[in-house]
Length: 331
Image (tube, rainbow, N blue to C red; front, side, top):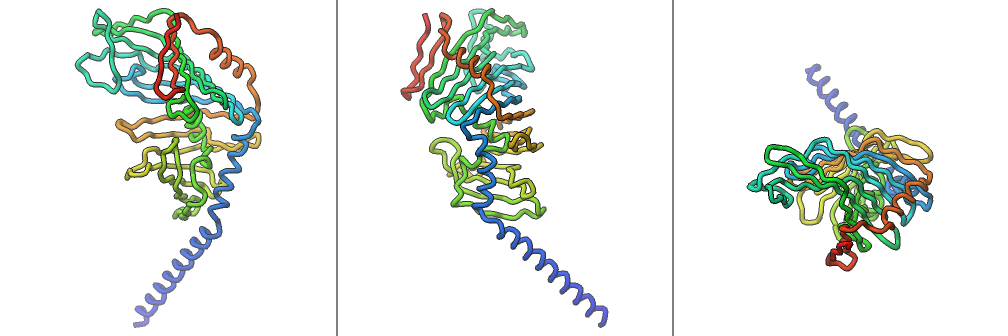
């Protein structure tokens, strides 16, 4: 009987201790307000949004469909310079694999063209230049043309083809998306998308993280729910995030960050992964992210020059500014 009484006492003590721990956890969560967490996130991003020039470099690794001309892993070496209302980016493409021959009978996600000798025609980007200001949003692509025969022989044609794209403000088609995704991969710019007035805080079991649920947006007129996992020991830095569009039951976008560093008054992740949950899933790995609070006038001038100089004969201008695209060929 004494033994049973002793066991009952110990069980009661354990229950009491668990209740105390739970109470402490709930108090910890309630001690932090949504405004404080949002303020920490926004303060970190104020430098990124300021009217002082910033320069960044990073590598973007993607894995494309076999039916896509990139075929396999594609590495983009990116460099950009920006300040408030002025973003410029240069992208250099490095292909890890040669294009492959695809039979006309195969089904792919992109149209496949063939020449008179039944060789597959492939266009690969070589360089891209992007400028986005309050006055204009433009993107210049330089592409190389090649053909792949049924036995796998590749013929590359000399020179490059140039295509210039002109977008209207707020267009989802614009190359400005490259800049948006880069910031998210670095763990930044979330204050642009989440609604501070609808934040719910959930304390995670490990005690070092909190889950933030909030309504918000992602693209223009794209509403949904954000879920952020923030590190309470690192100023509520975003470690994981997902966005679920209205009407869907699973996230359309998932994100994770790693290797957070602090320098020059900045705090950002050196690596980030963004996954778009379309079919098939689109993985984008951002690596070796480096951001500095300084101007790169040489890069700004190079991008400006590429977009302002006269286009070669045969180049195309695709203008989306009026809504319906118009195509002009330079003669």
